[in-house]
Image (tube, rainbow, N blue to C red; front, side, top):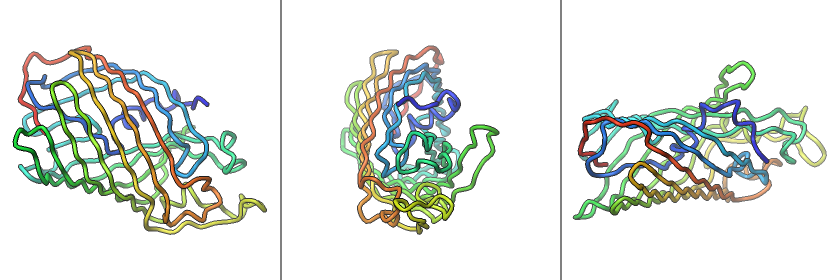
Length: 280
């Protein structure tokens, strides 16, 4: 079904570009760009849910490629620290809201508000090919998680996540593919937000449950990006594997894996007259 995402349009750029799918190009590019985009995505209400949300929304995007500071693609790069082999940047992630009326396992429970995550990420550039078209890196994002109440915009604190991943990317002409793989770990408060069942919410088919901290499953993400002058197309696939996660005994878990998909169309509506040699 279509999610009520127009109530939270500010989350859309996060959903599109964070979640471990950074994009970068090598070559002469504008110092800054303003883009207008349209995104279509299919996402589970939460990892382990049988219910999906379909999202189709327009969104704005701003990219800045300074000599040291770079903003875009779900990151603020060079703001904390950067060298030829190591960077310390900001990392972001987000999730959509989920109404219990739309979800069998959570029926009668409080809704899941949209969440966002923010924190530092240590990036180690492990290897690049001689032609500099293929790159291998290790990224170590540690993020604090918050929910956003859709009625009054108040914030809820939901602990921390740590999601290290190996990333390999290859670019050629105006195309690029990127593949990342890694585990996810989280605190009890984070797992509890999605998988706890209180005594008041318990039923004969949904017993009370308290999630623990630790392993939260693994994730594979594939992104393919094609650029045609002012037009950009991005295809996204994300596969979550929950086997052996600490919350697998929760009665809210309906499956042990999830597949998410997205298609993004962006159009450059303005750019700087000055160009820069931008590489990642």
